[in-house]
Length: 436
Ligand code: SF4
Ligand code: SF4
Image 1 (spheres, rainbow, N blue to C red):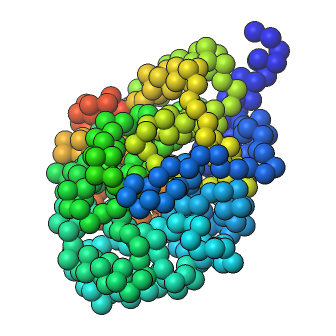
Image 2 (image 1 turned 180 degrees about the vertical axis):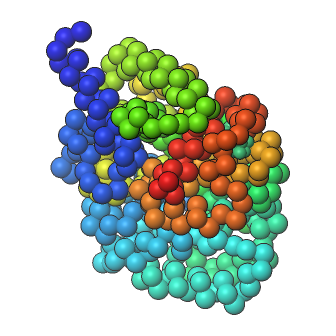
Image 3 (image 1 turned 135 degrees about the horizontal axis):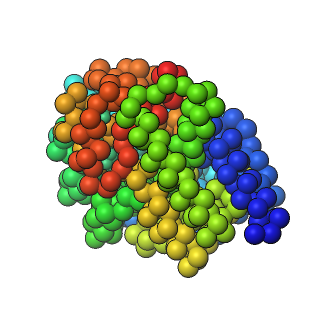
């Protein structure tokens, strides 16, 4: 191994732990260190547009997920990005509203979302819709989504559809959509993502869907994408970059070793497994000549865009460098090398990714821990840089939390069809979400 190769590998490993693990793959605060990110073009441009299903809108293949920085949003719009995904609960509508001021409103497609509960009324939903309009400083919203309904009844919620119909008639809304990435055991074990979105597709009133789909969790998403193509429903994606757990795990291993802490028996065994996986990871890094964790993320997004039924990928960007790195993926194709890397990644690290829209193990937990929900909050913390929200939601759980996992036999792990090392991941998630 030459000196440069050795240096690159060390940078990858060290940079991955220090930069990527500490704040997720998309750190919220600072810029990615130079050796961790591809050089951002000074003037990034969108190069591909796809038709967003029956809306007919030509949407940029790289679109914007959560972003709370007006200047970053403006930069992306200037580069040709034209779809912004926001929500009442994201608390970033004012920033989006400021960013779109002065633009030809027809050139940008704004999607917002409302979380619907059974007891919601026409009056209440109307007020909330109007508040979204005010925050976005716009006369109309292109698409209002039903945000994460967890039961099929909520897909057909009468008051929601009545308000949407009225808003359309008043010129305040163009299309109705739905967002879903799975449910927690505590609420309903029978309604995974494909059931909710399949119901929405059959319902006929939804024009756009936002769903979870990535190279480690493809089956459910592919079913939904095919159905949307048949019905000409627009498709946008979230959670396309499921990487990063490896770095988090290594950080935890290093910290425990450095602190010389006493750990429970199960954790000692888990650490042994982790150490072995980490050794395998070193071989993986060398074999695939990876010098940069962002390479896997970029490949994961290109992989998702390679599906012809995908109209756009919503990427969460917190700063200019992240935004530019995402936009540079527009119109690019997955290479054979990247495809091999992703397969190797899935083979090597797929067991560190709790699949979105799953929950298959939750019924086996004697304590009723909402496994998938906790891992989703952890994803918000890690990948979106939304630490406060994630910790608040975790603190609000009324079910058992993952602190109970430390002294358990790991029933969930044995029942996971994907072989995810979930007991340890839950323990790590608890530490991060509760600062334990
Ligand atoms: S641990 Fe496995 S079975 Fe449980 S929610 Fe995650 S992917 Fe699904
Ligand atoms: S480790 Fe035990 S307590 Fe924790 S989710 Fe799994 S089965 Fe439940």
